[in-house]
Length: 282
Image 1 (tube, one colour):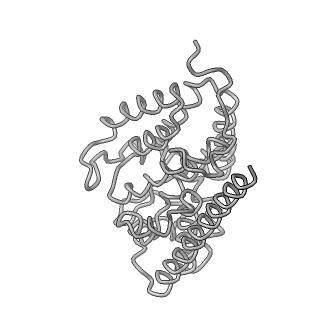
Image 2: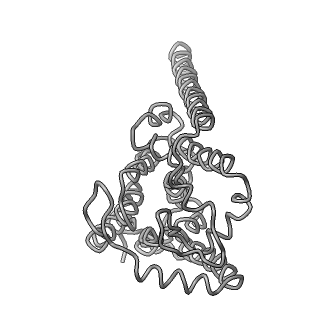
């Protein structure tokens, strides 16, 4: 009996040591990548679109046009007060941190996947947005950032509807309403400009996915609803990705969000909110 207990104890310790080694390797590798991009500068083309913004004229058609809501521009004002290079370093650091939180044991390998490396190099926020989607299982207010940047990601809110998680839905929508309400009070004209901009928004698909949003969104709805009703957590990030306004090569990096929802041990999914009624009822 004691031998069996000792053997089990050794296996547990070995597993913990292995997890610690992988997580440490991930941290070191991500720091190396962050330092390399920071020193070399890389090519932060996406960061240029939301750095140098004129609050009075947010929505202009140019090579690096700003696409997101006035609320996001206002929330990032302190960050954009930094010089461009430190600003990019912070955005890339946020992306790498999001990657680590979603895949602490595999981030050391994931960072070398071409879409993930390109995402971090471009200093976009797709990994941060996906972290918000995954975190919403425990903290519904995390939906604020996706909703004020890429509103069609809000298809994921159907998860709460299908599962009758009304409290979580209320938190997500209420938190977003507060942020948007304050933003509108500060600069209402910017919101009218954004709405006009969205009406004229081009639905031409991005490379390499030649499928417009109006064709993808119904598929996204079905996936999210089916996943919610059958308690398949991975369907939420997958459905949200498919429901993005446009899908680009960098969007593939968001598939990292499936890792913590596929049963891989991750604190984001521990004790996640359960439906207020059984999703199979009614």
